[in-house]
Image (cartoon, rainbow, N blue to C red):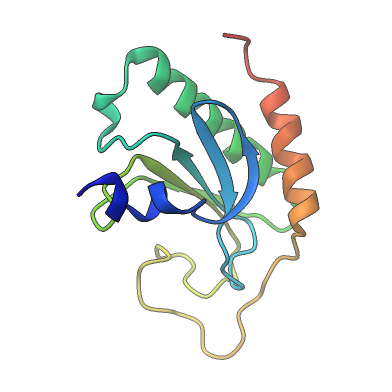
Length: 143
């Protein structure tokens, strides 16, 4: 795969929440999961071990800050973290707030839906998400 054919090199990968020189945080457009973020490495890198140790540390610190931010949102029961890259071999992490009444709970988002009818949804505006993530990022240790 070249950077020209990589979905995450050719687009933001979601609604921008925050960015620095190395990575970005986006909100994934999924009406069932309004607190679903991706942390995406800006450069085209296939695997975590392709990053130098300092970059891996920075990436994981940001992933953990996003997790901490999502845990503060009302109604959140659990946070799911995942890094696959099978379809899009570009370093990125999924950080998803889960609720007991969501469409797939307790299974992963990629499993068959367990809910018949309308799932229970938490309400999270993009502005609240941005504010919560920025507060969590402000608590990161300075590099």
